[in-house]
Length: 294
Image (cartoon, rainbow, N blue to C red):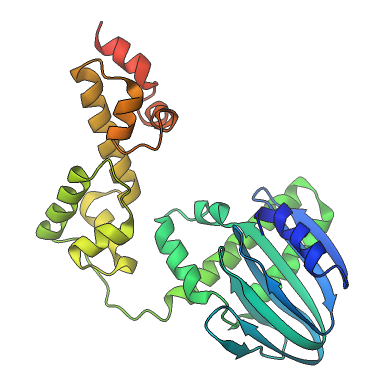
């Protein structure tokens, strides 16, 4: 299931024997399906979408869900929300009649909505994967999204976006509740020095929050906040700034091709470096080199 379109295409293929209605709305965008299901056993395939489902009506219903860790009983009542993260296959084996409201968003768009470290968001969402969450607020918000998606006006698109942000915030809250870790202050001077050493030594490599947190022994759930408390920046923004500073120094030091400088500084490509140069420095690297050597 890849994004809203891929999700709806999959639904038409996998659940085409049932009566369904589909809608797409919001700037994200969000794919939605309302389907009247009877007994079936279907594997929702892995893809790039983050999806969730809630039952609006159940009648003589029973079922099981298997996300790869063994089968669990599906709770036979309305008001239960079941999220599914991207890249996973989930089996739904159901009997009886049930009306389901489902929605899906490309996971990259979900992570971009959170002004924080994306890996932390992903971790929290993984904790609610295939869980059956009793949260009537999320259920009502999903139904409101469905209603506003039908109107298709500009204000309704904004409403869909706002409702999805509300849903995501509550899901993240559910994902973080099981983690009972003490509050964490800023990184200590020794911890910060170690992280900076790793960043500067391995700047050309892929640097993840997991890796940086492991270097300090600080739990990943707290690392981003502790790092920001110590530096004023999230790890992601800090690493970008470090890479840009190294690129500037290399550009000023000689005539090495920009593509080689990009890879030496950890950018995925010269175009990636150019985009970040333009965003943070106000000009592309080629122009920066010309103006610096006048």
